[in-house]
Image 1 (cartoon, helix red, strand yellow):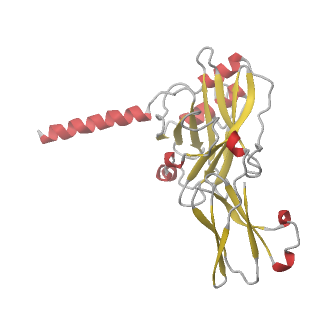
Image 2 (cartoon, one colour):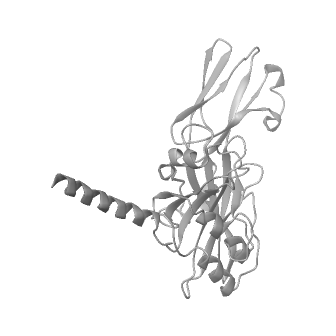
Image 3 (cartoon, one colour):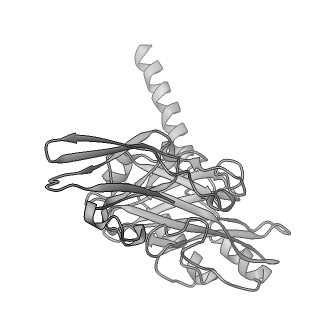
Length: 304
């Protein structure tokens, strides 16, 4: 009896897992996908509805880090993040509701958060183009909202790209939604929205930071991006020839450490050297570390 009971439970679990892995595309959910030609699968995350779960059109930064599984990512991309392609797409091809979401890689880092670093200019799009682009995304397999999947069929690669084929997202829309991780493993993706009556308009940007052991994924709506984060208050701790600069952060803001010597204080701050890699704020206290300091230095942290 016990053996039969255990078998029945296992069967129920298996069916439930299959449903998650093979769920149909849900219109206007935003799908974050990662691929690499040498990998055995794609990593796909359903972030949920663009306006409600993701916060597109809102006024505050949304932290989506809990959706990302570093364990799953590392099991697919065994060589690390460097060179992995990443994109966010979504849309709707239901009659009279045609629309599409697509990201574009932001060149040169975050830059000014109020101004997108990429551009999808246009004066308008036909119903046929938007409908066909959104239709590419329909069908299996997609994870359900708030879930992710290791897709061994490489469906994201087939449907979205990043190579151009007649039947994929790029082939239908002419838009390449992909960026690529470099070193450090931080990437910014500007999000755009279009419909037959509305040209691509800037909706904000995604920040993906895999440069540390704690993945950080946020979306900053365009209205939130227009407000600069407050300048942080700094605390300096010295230990031998190592300086630790601590400060409180705003969720989703990008921080850079700049410095100068005492003799260089008269030079404009825009010319001060940058030390280390950018840090993405998570709402708590974080720090930069400056090692092997052999002379006096003055520090400043810029926030974007």
